[in-house]
Image (cartoon, rainbow, N blue to C red):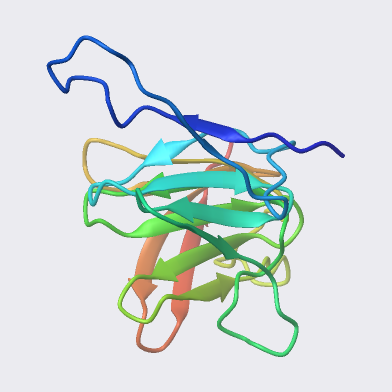
Length: 165
């Protein structure tokens, strides 16, 4: 395991021609294992890490980590993917516990665990990629390629359609 600080560039484009860097030094943020950085439509930077999901709002770092006593925490710390869809929903893929949907208004997560016993359940324990097609359909790739066919955040019901290859 290794630690890396994050360099951000708030001074670029300030008209002074001088690039300014600010090192965010947080010993709780381990970035090894994260697949990439994503900036959402609100301007926040999201880092998938092996220590949880990290959000940087331009001033401070927030680390979302698994808490076994809190069912609204992220499902595990090893985050592999972060994706924002056209409806501004933030989807999080994990290495062994499926998918999460971030609830911005509650600063919490809906956990979507794999259910291989159900044909329309999430089939992938590991979520490697999340994407949206031209019709607004969300696709999840991992142990299987699936389209999310319905989302009901109020009942926390999600159904999936597996693509047969």
